Length: 591
Image (cartoon, rainbow, N blue to C red; front, side, top):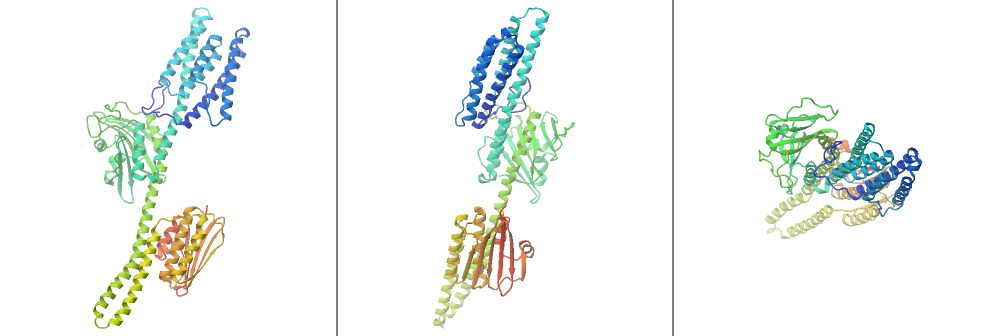
């Protein structure tokens, strides 16, 4: 896979050429089966049209039998999906040799020859193709020579046929090899993309993906550098393919950008460090315009990695360049990076090619979006954790901690009062005991709310009814719950967040609203789902109707509920009438 095969050099593949998976191998086998039927049919048509009548009977019968067999295998493949039946490639070699003996039609024989070359190329064997082309060229020249007189005319005819056989054979081999190379590359891109998963964690995803890319190019080190303008920091991962230790990124100041970002983001380049400045090539990644005078990367880059040669391309996030990915082979004399190759040998002196740089660009363009998703999911998780911690901190500070502080003050007063007024102190201790019991229940509720919750559409109605019943018993408050559609059809994530909003809204009313009656309505139509919580308590400190954006700007309203609503793409509206209650409305689109 490494680089593009030259027309006469079928062995310029990656040292790390991977075997094809079952699906890709099956696809190639079916391509070969279809090509066999097509080329045999073309050979038969050519033989009938061009060959003399007396010289084509045996050859035509042979091709008819061969074609029927090819069609039978092709038809069976189309009808049977569980098994795969193929004609062995050695049988095609035998058929090619037999047909060469039976016919004098060079053009008809060429069709079979080109098919065999294509089939062999899909196996990934360049040397076998060169051997086949050489033997077939000698065979066809010998076969034609047997039927023609010697002389200059015959000699030129032989040379022309031989040259045509070589060129057509190598050309068909090139096409077959490109087909296999395309499948190998697609397989590699899918493999690297699968490694970039949020569940693996950012560091492990980057380590495995960069390790695979370094192995693909037979490099000893890969580096990912991401610039974060908001934090004004540079995050750098340095990965060695054989290193299995998990380590996080280095966090560096933006002043180190020149070392790891090398130059302008618009350039994709390869550089080979020689005794002097070195040589390289590259182009504008946006337009593909090749640079005639490519500037050398900073000296600090070579010093940082001990680099002998490197490839560097840009990675994007949100359509904007945000970092660099580099592949580095070290200078054996520097000793700064492992001086032993992946196979225990000294690193090769092979230079990177333009084809490899373009392949590297394609890989990074492909892995850019999934890597960006991992970064975004990590950022969202951090925000969610921070928001939840803030909510817990706020609940503890405004609830239990305040109560404990009050208890401490009252106990200190009772300690001084008890010897003089024991009866009054006893009543106050009873009151404190009830307060402790209430706060214990509140703390137990908070712990329960922190447990992972799984809510599905089928369970939503029962869960809401069950919580409303418990709430009536614990809060001594009337709760009317109306669910308009008995058969809710909502994604699990929306169900979970809606239930959390519903539960938190009732708990907030219990703690702060001093209400006696709550009405909850849950409805769904084709476009959205809506939740309305209406109470007759004292309302919020503000008056009027506000959206979540207005609440954010004024720093009003329930923070946790706002974050949960925003997390599922919904809108929150709070309507407050101080002294006469409040209404909370959540609407979440379903598309």
